Length: 403
Image 1 (cartoon, one colour):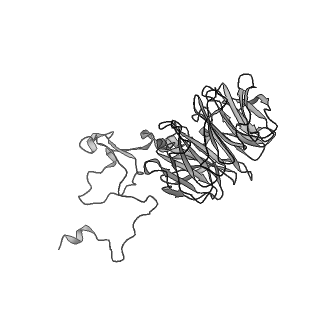
Image 2 (image 1 turned 180 degrees about the vertical axis):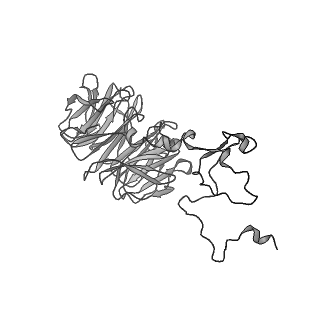
Image 3 (image 1 turned 90 degrees about the vertical axis):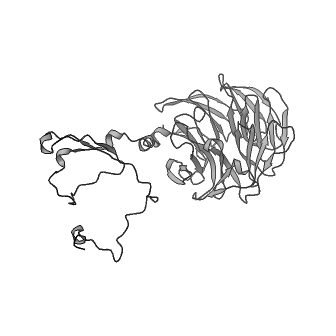
């Protein structure tokens, strides 16, 4: 899809959960919506400016009928996505500019500001449900764990905290130790059993929920600059349980596989502009991934074009890896112990020995079908064949008959 020009720097983007529509929050305070199709064509749906101050974050309702926008104005604006107008405004929702907003449940929102204050909201009420002040620096990202009804927050103060939204105490149920690094982004993998956090120094910190939240269990270096945005792949891809998309300050959107760690490739390139936000359409299960940096354009990348060979590598058609050896190719006159030189089929190839066109040549027909399995003994796929030992020699088998 061609880049979508928006006319100002993009702070955040959000997709409609069921329709092919993307919303962008801009530096000039505007919110722009664009419709797109499978062929990559796009058109502007609506434009409005709830505030003259920057719109930093966006999120949609469960059915996509409402869009919440907030930012430097410290207010929360509710936008009707059908008409493209502001239907409700909550002024002075925070004392500081709001940096993140996330829909947690159908009737609950979470917001975090530059001073580390987190508030839970009921969209039907004007006042917040509860507030949390255990962070002392900006709230960078949210992660919602639906199974435990917990909100995971990352902050610039170097800690991660866990909030149980069902509790009534204004304090988290858990908070990590100081990671001595700014935590900028967060995403869940392995069906929510592990959580990956992007940091200012370019390290991916992995937390294991079964081991608690005090400290990370693994650190994955490799990114040359900060990891400002993280996103998961749609579940339709075979490696989605351990593969994430990372947006870095070097302007590259990468696909990274964890366990084992492997850089799969670059999905999009924003040049010298840092990537601030990435998201996949249709509730994270769509075809397009949108990425926004400090430039004035929205990049929409087709994931099918990037990962089109993944399924083919995972499930190879057996019919393409079958080598037919006719019985006529086997010479019955070869003496016992003689070596018949043949070219070995590739590893994983099914070898089928079929009947000869003329059964008289071999005195019968062969109907043996055998699939060659991969050897389990080769632990290192990069290791080559073993070298001959220093004192090892090649001897003809007849040499031992006279002993």
